[in-house]
Length: 133
Image 1: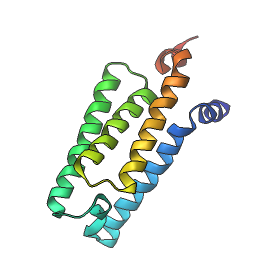
Image 2: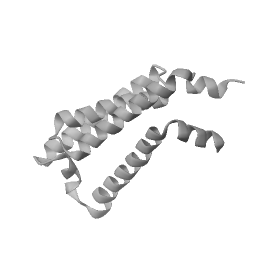
Image 3: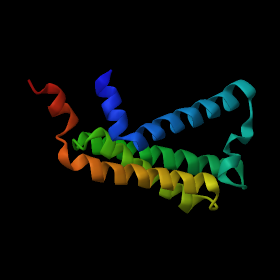
Image 4: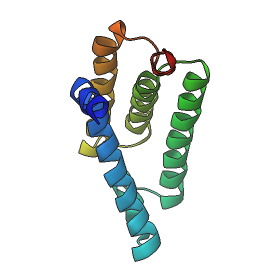
């Protein structure tokens, strides 16, 4: 538990991201599947719901694709997540009208990238430090 608390203190923006993303995801799933609210994409702006859905799908798919490749190239988990999420946030700005939701995503992505750039310099890759005797 102390390792988690130390990591939480060292990377608070990363854990803020995890908390925010979990909340937004669960809220989306609840509204979409339980409530049956087809307007769950309204936060991205107005327009044809099919087109909005396609852009959201594309942004999330490229985020996942980039994350998987960065991890395959042995980039540290927090670093890979930060860069992939920032790319996703920039896609939201490119695909949709600029709204507070998209701006907050970019700020969170930038915060995560800055955090890993500042904190990650003095660390070895996570899998090596965990496996070291």
